[in-house]
Image (cartoon, rainbow, N blue to C red; front, side, top):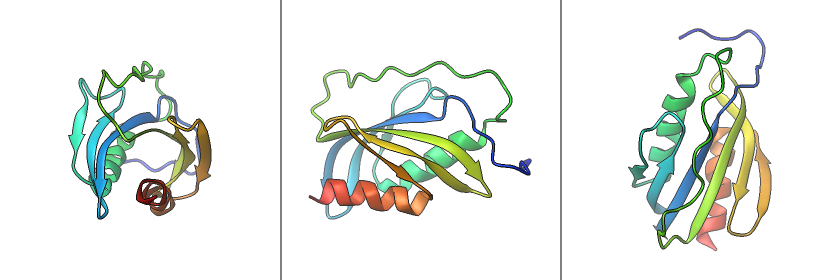
Length: 125
């Protein structure tokens, strides 16, 4: 893997996470990303982060943008839908925006851990 010397914005780094259930810190749902042919079923918040890390790691930051993904949930009975936009990545640290689509609210995050904490706080309410 090649590391960039400077933080570089990368295109098409948006994923959609549809949460079907969340109990005692365990998330069940789906992740959608332009590099995936179909929705990927996820069973934990850690799995979401690891999958995203692998997908973001595939980008070279200099290629042409990937197509945008469909944001519809195909009629799934979800408790929350999040758009995760990873705007910058440097030394395996992410910076970006978390958009809680159901409430039309957004916030920024400065690391993967902060992103996980934000999602957990929202879903634990």
